[in-house]
Length: 261
Image 1 (cartoon, helix red, strand yellow):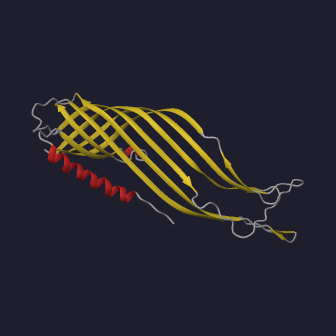
Image 2: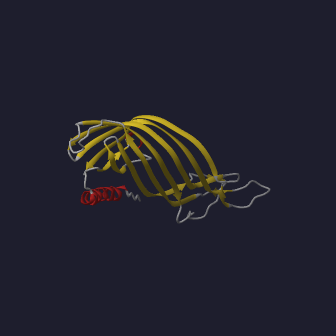
Image 3: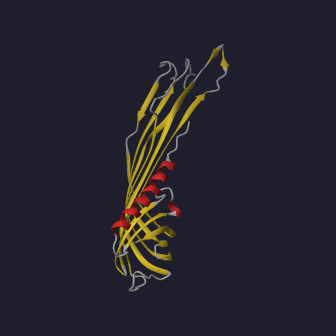
């Protein structure tokens, strides 16, 4: 069984985009507002899309902010039977089954400014092409979780051979909190008075704070003289935390379509 949710989010993104266009169009007076929807083609896993809003204060200074959220969930049924053979008229048996649910949440936010660029005086008659320099402060949150909501079921009777140990499931949660800066240059092409396409490239630096919590289910049988049948075990690992630096250069850091009003 598989359950995937991104289609619902895509519809919500498009609905919100047109809702914001309607809202800002009704309140904007000087045509200095801009709303866009875009992708980061080389970083789709972390930032699959961004909704952005910009406010132009002068011909060469613009305040900008953006937000993107993606949630994905799917489940998978796991079933395993170990291929034992008959030894000394004794049939060893071992099997298990469970439903594994994977949940992924990615959220990102940025706020920044655009400056320099073409300094035209009449904002109602923009050039076909414009350029600018941008600086962003960014926040990201990633959470990836594997859960066994119904536990593990062992059908039938398990008769393991002595000395055997099976790890039947590994699950837990990985979390990342990211703080960073982006610096780049943007090229803007005006399709018409109300629509433009923007391509940004540049470099970024980020500090990544990671946390990993891991759990496992095990089952096994000890050797004599400490024979204890078929024990089942549950292990909780000590949470692992780390800090890492992340940086990079991207020729296509952001591609967006923008509505101006």
